[in-house]
Image (tube, rainbow, N blue to C red; front, side):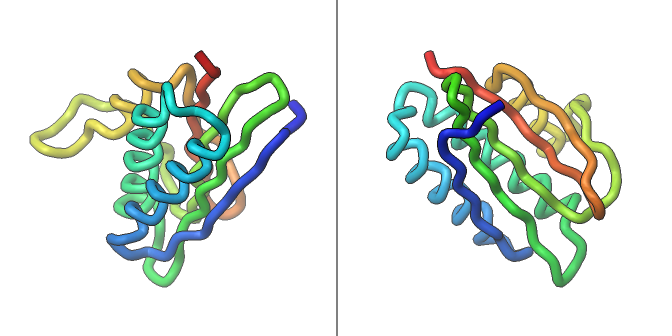
Length: 128
């Protein structure tokens, strides 16, 4: 799939990085005219970044947020981290466990891919 636009930012392993990821995504979405789905996409960015921060980024490392807008108008959000494991939707436990449940509900599709080291968790949206 040909990519028309690509934007990425590296975020350090710190709490404020989730806000940085959200702001970065919101700016790209505004520039690309994705206002109609911007709230859903930004929430998914926040959830994927939080999961990377809490579960996927070893101390001293960070994660990469990549936004890809393809020629066919599909937007793919990717969060790359160097941690192990394979995330999946699970039944919420108290105040945690809702992140991928929200991503699965809001995105048109999502998944997990391998990288060395670690993984990439992604979701995709089609323009309304």
